[in-house]
Image 1 (cartoon, rainbow, N blue to C red):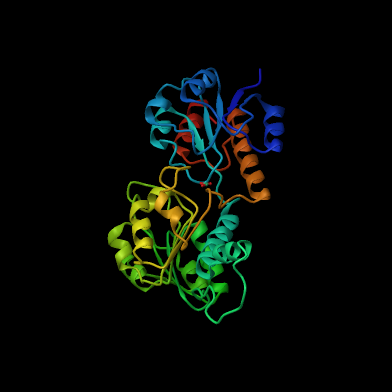
Image 2 (cartoon, rainbow, N blue to C red):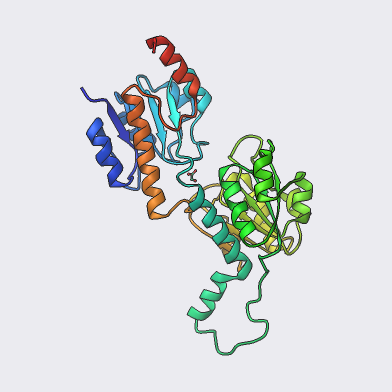
Length: 332
Ligand code: GLV
């Protein structure tokens, strides 16, 4: 009998077709997803689940999932899953890295440029019929080229953003818990600096760290007060990496000049102060949302699920210890 998989929300049809070739698929074919109660009913008896960010796999949920072999997350971030709890329970967990790196970096840069050059304000200005004459300081913003870009988190996406910064002749500072390989530092002409130096010297601060206990509220009031008054903050990582109330206060009171925000602490809620400000460009968590990339993310999650359910190592496995112990048990 084919293994059975729950797909908790709508994904690209190609991925569903692929899953159907290999599994029995219980597909929640809508964008609402399931309530906790519905989820508990439908996950029963399944060997795999293709999940999305809003599906929370806490230790308690994971402990209740008997017979589940894989959680295939359709996202690179996996803060919605207690991976150590899944590892203890012997459940494989996968994410979708690499396929979204360049697309996410494009969007971080789009927010950076939009906030710096006031693209959304300009669009609204023309739309509202306010454009009657040209004037020397109409909608003047901040230059991007030759300025200093500070990147928190020099992983795949951080590096892709740095590459874009180099294309704009920017000086690139970065801070991370782990220093990037020397070859990467040299290729991208990166300067590894302290958190404080990055905040003090950067014209743009872009966040590319995963959400961990150590990165929660990485940017709060103390950090925002260190930033330049002309600085622009960009967040395409996770909302809780920045203290949203503090960011709103900093933008309102002019501690920093502007922000481009794709992620928020309690999505889809956005701090109402942010929505009243002209110097903030907001987006609904769409940094990886290009047609090709969202399709590839769907396909990678589906492939990960099928690999695991057919007894092969999933492609982008987050907890190899589970695979090692499964292989040891089956004597592979
Ligand atoms: C999106 O936020 C992702 O983690 O892929």
